[in-house]
Image (tube, rainbow, N blue to C red):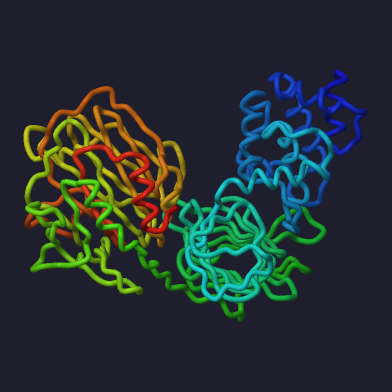
Length: 548
């Protein structure tokens, strides 16, 4: 083994290096790909030898937890990347979880590789890793009811939460994870967010609701772990450390380490079943008498629009502007003189929210409805912009605005443009609050150029969205901030479109139950422009609705 590699391993294990030596090794780590791969492989080998001697689950379990394979299987480069990804997704935490105590070495090997931090020993590297992890949002506070936090951090509704510990003294809080998982917990509670699909609960009562496609969410406890198998379940941890679990819908797997053994006792609970995990004996009792957290009722917050908003929009000279604050004989009037109204179909209504502000309410597939315009909207070919406010009350993929060519193209729903909110980006797993805008030229019912946001428009919050295009360049803004731009490679020509809000496509007499990508939630302040809005205009409009 060469001297550099040997010194790097010494430093990784917490040993001291001569003055200046750490900087030399750090420089080589940054610039020498082969050296990074060697260090990763050696660190992995040392970790396996340690874990193989531990009483807790062995290294195969670790590989399964991290979702990676050893270097002999995928090659050094692939292995190095996998370790780095695992570290980013699941930073080191010193907790009493039954498998993590034995795996510190394997995860810590990625510290030097993933973020280029110095080899100065664990006391300096651990806080740095924690700070890096907090930069990534894992969940957002959706609702906080009489919340009293044990630390000084104020986590009001809308606050982002990263890989960190959250301690609630009293009250109740609802978190929405980027995966779409909803987690409610009640104080006193002690939680730690590890990843978008994993939390540690040391104290308190919690309840999770896992949407389809996000199965596998895990709650670790002092007694073991509860893993979702497509379900809604509750966990209650008593002061003596015993874990009580109840499944309200679907299935869940509970697992408990057995003292003095390497095995793990598991059991599957189905709907209406409960259990109690006894950490001292490794026993799982088939029924629990504990009380569990009841389901929460999450309310959409009020939209706080500045009184100057409507006049500001008029000054921007839209071709169409519907405030969605009133209904006149089944139609919603256009604020632009002589421009057509919107029509309501199905269960869509104009109703006040909790604060009295009126907006359009959509009930989704359970009671379908749509807003649409009878008359065509003409895209001049020079470009256009669509703007609205929305608040979804679920994570399902749903259409906000659909522009469909009326003639001369594919007769089967020839979409020209589409903006939707959903739970998936290309090549990724389930996510909440992803906004996607699509431009298709020529208009058709599939393909096209799309822009996808990261999880930025979470449910149960109001968001301002602008999607616009000019000469084939597509732009997307959420809450006043640019998401990016894309070029389709051609310039769309003038085309007449039908406008639909809350579904992909609609025609008079259509079966409402068959509508696709139905929106559930509220919409307000829809504006259509025959030009592009400037970034400063977009920021101004968003700020008048509470997004500075």
